[in-house]
Length: 447
Image 1 (cartoon, rainbow, N blue to C red):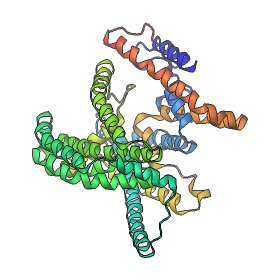
Image 2 (image 1 turned 30 degrees about the vertical axis):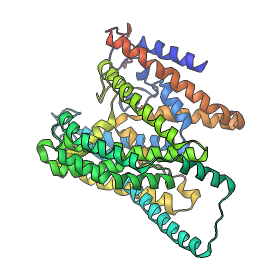
Image 3 (image 1 turned 180 degrees about the vertical axis):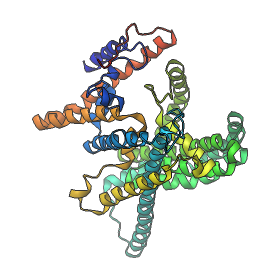
């Protein structure tokens, strides 16, 4: 029922979005001054549903990030126009206000990634060391405490295991194809860069998969950043940006897939599912995804203004990763004035938050906002945080009124909100491809 209602709600909103910055998604909920700083509720049921699923801490971290960035930092930096950066530069220039937005976001992402990478690596090393000691102790005492269910799961998993030669043959085959195919797609990427990436990837994949098994954290984006900065420095100014982004995508794909497979095999071990069946299913899904994902991307790319910082589809992480590559090529000269000092400050602030969260008692640490989440509104806008907090407010009130019913119904209601409005994007994109524009522009102006 909710699915149908919010599908038609998306259809209804479309009628009033005839031009840019028109429609319900530009409703000045808190006044026009707040709207100019992106503080408004844009009636996105997708974000409201996502906020209902996410924890209160995640949603409140988004709000804190929105207040720090759009409520304080960007207005204050904007007042320095003419002193810190030239007045005649467009706002989208990386030497103007947009540069501060991007590089301060990068400082939070990079710091949070580095902190969690060291943290996961520490847990991984400690676990390996503990297993080695436990194994030696068990060898000496001969004590085996496997329960019957565990033995059955282990027996099935080993019996239906995947031979090592299949994995090795597949990896060698693709490591031979990629140095030929990738330079054809991206001429800036030399064939020997791809070979180096394939040599380094297995070690990174093992560390990431093992760490994810211990902490349930997929750190593939951090391994991708290592490849990004390495290739940016190696390739130089002429080809560095494209080569770095391609190498980042290559390493990230290999490392991420290994982690996802490890999580799936872990689930299969618990549910007594055949590993071979899971691998075949993954291969079929990957083959279908190669076609469907490409078609979906080009459908969006043709129908909507993807990447426009003022549009609905901002693609903020595309901007962030591109400027990471520029930073790797050009160094700190890519920063606008005083941006490096601000990045140091945000870096230290994020480390401080994580240290308090990890080292203080739980009753204190649980209130610390998450730096990785805080950076999302820096580029997207505060409306995203307002929508998510609206979802968390609905859940909070529902849990207070009827806790049992809320625990049961919140995932279903959130799914209805997300899927109902999200499905409208498909007919909306087809209408855009057919050059059918909404008939009405609803806009709000000061009197």
